Amino acid sequence: MALNCLVVTCDSALLGEIKANFSERGAAVDLRQDSASAIELASRRHWDGLIVDCDDVTGGVEALSKVRNSRSNRESLIIAVLNGSTSTERALDLGANFVLCKPIEASRLRSVLDIAIPKMEREHRRYFRYDINVPVRFQNHLGQSFTTSMKNVSEGGMAIRLVDPVHLKGVVPVEFDIPSVEPRAFRAKADIVWSDAFAMGLRFLHIEKDCEVALQSWLSSLEAQVQFRDSIERGS
Image (cartoon, rainbow, N blue to C red; front, top):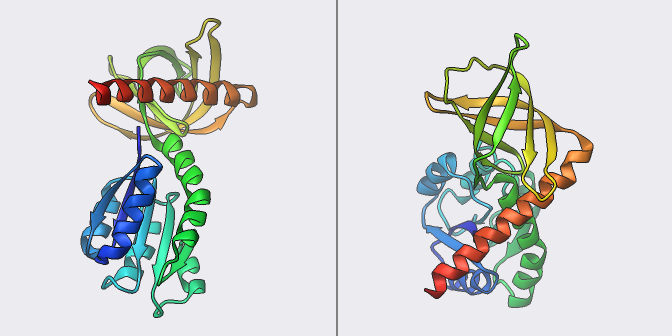
């Protein structure tokens, strides 16, 4: 899956530079030209990276601050673009990871993206959920053990299907076998962050050390499968 980035600007020249550079790196760009719609969108959707034109969009500084403090994008990478009204120090204090100042030099933009894109890719893998059907073993607060099926997984957590009514709360031990020629048990403690009548979302709090590498390797293989399917679809 391509990186998904939000650009908040009404500067067509800036947008053109960003689109050209992001396209070369396989990243998709969505545009908002006002701070209010950007804040609303960021409050309900996660982005791998954001570029906020702080000084030339009314309320741009506020957008930077609110996006950084939103639940969905607290860890997302943010590039602030300044044009004389906001200081670099203030932009960084409000949550920007990188700062660009207008007029933006092409070489400066490329050098920032050379560092920022790998960080966005890391955020993408941490957050992006891969659809997968794998049995998951749990133990609830009463010590009762049961098995259900995984709905999706990411570096940061997973969702499970609730086939039968299951009463889980708080932090629970999780175990499942990572699919492979030689399946390996994954063990962690996870916090239940949401649930409905059909599924439940969990965030990994502690992963056993020897399981971390196996999880990363599995996610890399799932990403490769997604990219392969995408390339086939683009070619058809």
